[in-house]
Image (cartoon, rainbow, N blue to C red; front, side, top):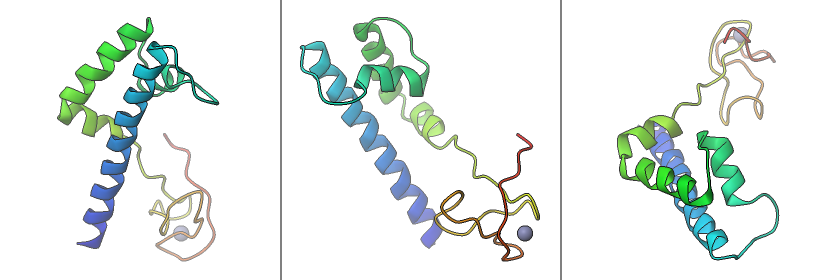
Length: 113
Ligand SMILES: [Zn+2]
């Protein structure tokens, strides 16, 4: 079950990133800033949270506690399918790999979202 392992690994990385963002947000609340976009801005954008840093942290903590919801959110990205056969793309997936897994031809992602 190589594929399932890959998905679990991807999810663990995504969760680890959420924890890292929470840590960065907590540092920002203490006045420590890193380069680039703030964790506050990233978290608000990715999870659709609104309000002050404290409010965003509270919402993020609630999400982290609710593992099923967090997992659902992090695995929500639907795999794009090819526009020729409506099949998945080969590893590592669109747009890094534009070979349709069904016909083996270069393809675009279908846009019937
Ligand atoms: Zn195809």
